[in-house]
Image (tube, rainbow, N blue to C red; front, side):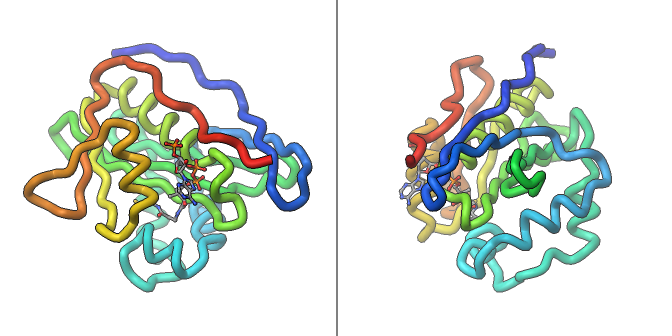
Length: 186
Ligand SMILES: CC(C)(COP(=O)(O)OP(=O)(O)OC[C@H]1O[C@@H](n2cnc3c(N)ncnc32)[C@H](O)[C@@H]1OP(=O)(O)O)[C@@H](O)C(=O)NCCC(=O)NCCS
């Protein structure tokens, strides 16, 4: 198994207040459904639709419980926490397909915090941790109209799955550098 070090906290600058804010990226603790709900609760209807592909606004409790069942080899999640308030503002997850070295990856960032590099940092963390668990390919289910996400994943090297128009596949077996953050908006 590959060994890697935990990345240092990232400091981003918010657009609105113009105040430097420390954003800490940490693993989701097993059973921490409150943090899962906290992040989902800060998504606008449009963002929730892009993440869930339905009009669902509140995550059903059984889903939150399943998402919080983290385990080193089977599924992991990382959250971005606003150092000033302790509030979780984003989360990336991967779920291994049982018996394979493939995992599904997903990410969401609270609307007030989008466009600041948090999603990129979380995805970098998902790739790092999945790779460390022996995952070689990530699969992302992205709506065809979600051009931002599709363009971003394509820039990371993802390819369209020819049998499913919503699926993009990203090979992560090679230990290349993962972009850790998008340009920060000052
Ligand atoms: C998609 C999402 C996770 C991106 O998170 P984010 O923190 O806003 O993204 P970042 O600021 O880290 O930017 C990530 C990439 O998107 C690009 N990007 C961000 N905002 C953009 C915008 N408004 N227009 C175009 N590109 C944009 C960045 O340039 C970056 O790409 P790069 O690294 O190649 O330059 C976030 O918008 C979100 O949660 N959306 C709703 C849920 C969702 O769509 N989840 C994904 C479902 S598969």
